[in-house]
Image (cartoon, rainbow, N blue to C red; front, side, top):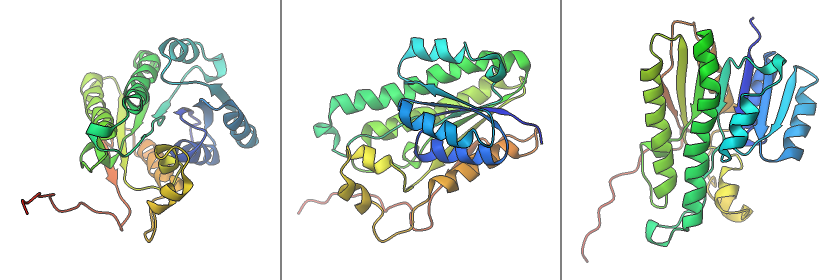
Length: 253
């Protein structure tokens, strides 16, 4: 098996950490980027017993820092074969008229701008080499709205359309672009959304079996392992216990 260099953003927890563990288990070289230095260094130390790992303290919202760090990687890690754009979050579940604008700003800056900054920093190298794979982590919220999803769903709709347009831009350049859109998954996602309220976070998954980070990591890894003439464009995945709701209809009483 060819050893690849895999850059994963938001790698200190959730899907990112699970992807790091999966790619490490398969023997790939890792660049693990996250805001929380302590957690990313602990993970890098653990996985470093299996593979070469470079931990990066990186806030994807900071454009200059992203460009400086990702275009100035050490020689051993400078050829990025797979970029997993995982860094992202949801904040709050208020309806739009009561939503916190700071929450909206943070989601736009992270889920949209951060993804763009990382992609733009890595893509020229892939194009120059005529090889590479960008895997974007989206959400079923891109296609299926729900009350309180407002800005979060909007940011993931951007990820969906941006992924499609990347495919259009990169035709003939031998670069793959895949979009993985998970549904309900028991990670730190809800804990972050409810700003550390563990009771609210756990109630989201009460009485049902959600996806796990490992489930999603296995899917992400699979998209990178299909034969080279195949591109997995978009893959939406939900737990069996989750499905689409009936249309909401308000009726005058």
